[in-house]
Image 1 (tube, rainbow, N blue to C red):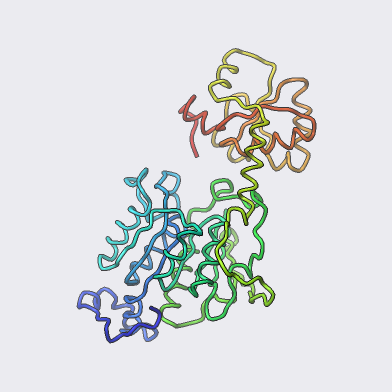
Image 2: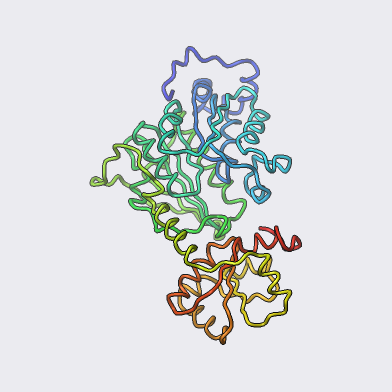
Length: 390
């Protein structure tokens, strides 16, 4: 309801006091606060981006907030997902978020959608809301959110983060560009690491999420200049902001319907290829690896293909670090040839995916190997709990 009938919206005495710092702003005032109260915002995800933006949208007085998420709170979330607390570990994120939102603003209506957003349910979930805020961390869902917003004519407030860098924009607003003007085609699967693989500075999503909240409020108020047509880039390590202009592509394909976004982004094909590789690949469990190590056998070499900083966190005794990027670039292949010296190759990573990829590359180079199923995470959980999980 970006153009509500303000005569039907009333502010209570408590709301006049609560929002007094808004009300004395000429750009907000009573009319603007009524617009915020009448507005509805849907947040996709309650992770790093969703956590801060939900806090500030609730505090700003957004009348109705919808949340889409199907995950549970993990202890590794608490470094950046500030809407959740330690007591909520193992419980649904959307319940945690709702509890915190209502503590901030009991008058806010909070709608929960404890489900994965799909092509089958996206239009129905998004349709009732004025503004959609994308707090997701994967390409299939970003394309899905974009296309659904285009079909429904909804503004899409975008943000993304990785390591020390973040970006934000506003899509599909006032004839401006949409996400496909920024990324006409998705990158190949695995090319862009997730935060779980690449890491993220915990403070970074707070900055980008608050920018998304700011853009959302500006859209509802109809004030200021939004990021529509601009991509804001932020480097936290250098503390620098810069902008890129973004224009609609006049020859972009017309979005007529929602599709299979896992397939569109190559995820389905990549999973099928990975499953095929695993079927063709010899695997061993962490228990079998433990028995082999305890036996004193010296006819194998255990190679860890994670990154050096991960190796510093936790390692399996006797393992040798050869990072996957080195293997992909060729130098790691030569190093493994040198250290094998006729021995069997056993490879592991955090959960088994990267080591499977490394063994596929090595196989093409004539080196056969065994993959440790579940990686060092399984080792920590099933063999040696003193090895830290991360």
